[in-house]
Length: 360
Ligand code: PBG
Image (tube, rainbow, N blue to C red):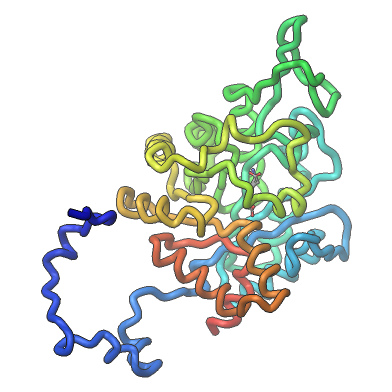
């Protein structure tokens, strides 16, 4: 006997199914009006979050090579972009920063006049009713491009990385967890002070949600929510982002802190712990290759659930469309709809602005 590879859920087993010809599912697919009537999932611009990469200078709009249609924007250009996006019904944006300088303590991430802090202030004062999310991570601001403090264990004993961008080839290094929490907490408070509405930590250090919650509360930001990148996988799909944000690690990779793509049960533990530490919303990232993780998280947790359609997902659609191998708009909308169907109520996507235009 052949066993079915897919277990039939108990609820589905109870649905009475009459055989053909009494039952013809095509009856409700006949016209677009009928299809619209029975459609189970809908996209709305309010559920989309538009990521922006903020760079120094004025009047700058520099296209990212591996992400056609995505730009590094100076603060003034970002304000314009947010105004246009907001007018299309997209309520939220998320900010990433390209600082003037990088160092070993990510000063640019938590500086009062940091690039994201400046952008947040300008956007909040010039655009009404927009939700500004701040990505909290150190990689864009660290000279070595890792998401935490790096400690080198040389023969001479442990030492900090110092001014060198990379440890000696023979040395072992470690991304230290607990010391990094202080910088992440400091960054979060600084972003909240500059007007950021939602703090979104993407670093994957253990305990960061609790540390950030504590620091925000202590600074009087007890009403600022945390959207935790709870299940963030160590993914090749982040490639183009690292070019956009100039944040590629200078040595090694992120596998010692981001999750193994093989693990869904561990993803549930990550999410559970972030909720215990005080996350108000949770995220799964990337989106399309991880729809099962989104569905499992939706099933198990009752917090608002976000998914990030990441740079590589965007770049693949763009590249195939440029070759005329796929219908760009159709695949763009289908990819977003399916992420939503899997269970994400909020989608971070580089298509937010364009999708909103098509939805209007
Ligand atoms: C920062 C961060 C990354 C992304 C969001 N926040 C890059 C990374 O972890 O390497 C990726 C987003 C994308 O690929 O679109 N840690």
